[in-house]
Image 1 (tube, rainbow, N blue to C red):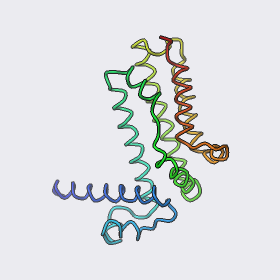
Image 2: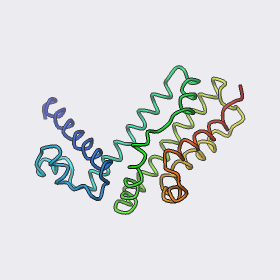
Image 3: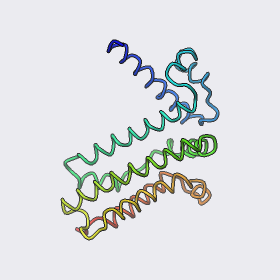
Length: 199
């Protein structure tokens, strides 16, 4: 296949994933059909099925795209020459409330209607977070910002597990009046202050 056709094909697939993600985020996964996605994009279902054999396959691609996007953000943070500035930004970051309210429906739909995909995503996200947290700790120690007495592997596992468990058990947090980003920020604050050296 000529390169320009391959690029066009990849662009169409990315557009389907992006549009589906936006619809799922706005309306929930369960309530959005393939017809809705095709209508939004102005394509036929035949075109959709060229790229995805089913909605399940689309969900898998969407979750992989999410992991890739997260990895890109993590790489950017890890390669920032000003690690101290990155840490300061992380500790003072706040999530937009407009985004917060829609997250639980997505997670609920994934857990209930796509448990296999959700479980695979959870495991991959856990491994990804553990890997990047380990790299952050190693660099922080090398630059004198993180306590050198830490068990790096155990700390990375603990931090990654907190985030993974929060996503899986978000209903319990909601029942207590909290949302996922609030929990993530609180966990980040506590854990970061626990690993950083006192200056």
